[in-house]
Length: 217
Ligand code: ADP
Ligand code: ADP
Ligand code: ZN
Image (cartoon, rainbow, N blue to C red; front, side):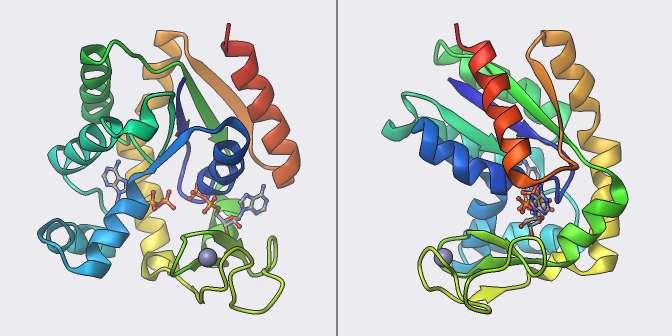
């Protein structure tokens, strides 16, 4: 089972993926997390990706496609995976189809989480992330039990640099131009499920689960 989570920055992809991965026992592939880890440890990949990420732009397709290709070959992905934040361009989607075809697999379901722009702004500017396990919180909508401390691992929470208002606006623009075309791309493939993401996390989650179960026959 290969599931893609599609949606603008702040839609709740990471939040929902955290729950799905636990319940469905699927591998989790979040290109943003992988890239941030590379930047933090200063690898060659991280050095290349850093400037794009800071500006709120997309890292070049070749780089992220290679990351995902390698990751999908890992043993824990054999039974299936959730892709969060990839693909983000039509070129990436084409490349993914090809990688999967070579493995005898395909994209089974694309969960498109739709959220209004104003809501995205407040979600992103209030987001906090764990430095150690990348769990996601929100200062108002999903606060940790102890201020700035991760419920899951006790790690320190921080605000991503690209969650500042100006960079968020740039990222939303990039989303509209380069990622939104994937909605039609996957609709044409007959795998798209549109989810109303403007609601409580639990309600959104229930809809996503139903959409996935509907597709798994
Ligand atoms: P978001 O909260 O917007 O979903 P992510 O953590 O997925 O953010 O991504 C953060 C940044 O990492 C993006 O703004 C982009 O620079 C880079 N990135 C992540 N995934 C991709 C991808 N599939 N293609 C290109 N760049 C990516
Ligand atoms: P994405 O991965 O799509 O960028 P996240 O899952 O990181 O989005 O969510 C963005 C922010 O919004 C986080 O701070 C998260 O806690 C919060 N959030 C996620 N889903 C909801 C929701 N349904 N209602 C309110 N806040 C939410
Ligand atoms: Zn943590």
